[in-house]
Image (cartoon, rainbow, N blue to C red; front, side, top):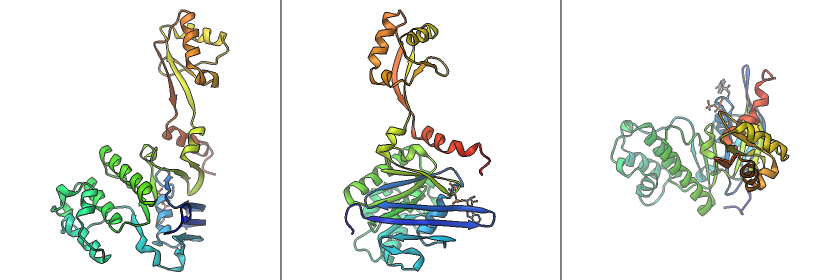
Length: 311
Ligand code: ATP
C-alpha cells in the first residue's frame, strides 16, 4: 500500500521521561516506504524505548507517532496487521516445536497455507520439529524473526535483530532484509549497536545518543563524510616523509609503522605518490587507499559529547 516514498513512520517531538532520566529526548524522524532505516546507538541510548513507543507498547511523555498513516497514540490498531516486529528477548512457546510455534501465529493471523515457507526462508528446516526450549539463542532469534515476517508485513520494526546470531546468521538476515526492501518494497526500521551490521544494508542511519537524534545520513551521502587516506609503507619511512614533504604532500606517521596521506591530491593520484617515492630511492612496499569504517565514523560523531560531562 502507499506510493513509493510515502512516509510509513512519522515521529514528531517524541519524548519519554523516567524518574531521573530522559530515555528519548525530542526525537523527530520520518521513514519512507522501502527504506531500511537503522537507529544506531550505544547501550542505553534510547533505541528500545523509541521502538516501544513506535509500537504503542509504552506511552510517550510528549510527541506523536504515526505508523502507516494511523496515529499510534490514539489507540488505532488498524495498522498492526501490516506490521511485523521483534522487540527484545525472542519470545516463543517453549514446549511447542518451531513448526507448532509458527502454526499458532499463522492461525492467529488467519493466514492460508502452512508455515513451511517461512521456516525455509529463515533456514529453520533442520529444527522444524525441535521444541523451542531446546534451541540455541541464534535459532530462537530466527524463530522470532519468522514470527515477525510470517504475514509479509509492509513494515518491519526490529530491535537488535542481529542479537545472538553468529556472523553467518547476521549475513543471512542482512540478505533477507535487503531482498524484502528491494523486491517487495517492505520498509524496515531496525536498531543496532553493532555498526558493521548495518553498513551496506541500511539506506539511512540515525545516530541516537543519550536519547537525542544527533545526526541522520543517507548512506550514499555518508560516503562523503567518511575520512579517507592513503596508507603507505617503505623501507625508510623517515626519508619517505621528508621526500613527500618536499613535493608538497603532508604525510603523517601511521600506527604502528608507515605513513598516512590524506591530501586530496594524493588520494586522487596515488600513482604520483608512488612515482615520487620510486624516483627518490624509497619505493613503496605498501600503498593503498583506506576508508574510515562506520564504527570509526560513529565514534567520531558521538565523541564530542563524551568529553563534556553529558551536559
Ligand atoms: P540497549 O542497547 O542497552 O538495549 P537502548 O538504546 O535500547 O539500550 P533503552 O533501553 O531505551 O536504551 O534505555 C534508555 C535509557 O532509559 C537508559 O538509561 C535506561 O536505563 C532508561 N530506561 C529504560 N526503560 C526504563 C524504565 N522502565 N524505567 C526507568 N528507566 C528506564
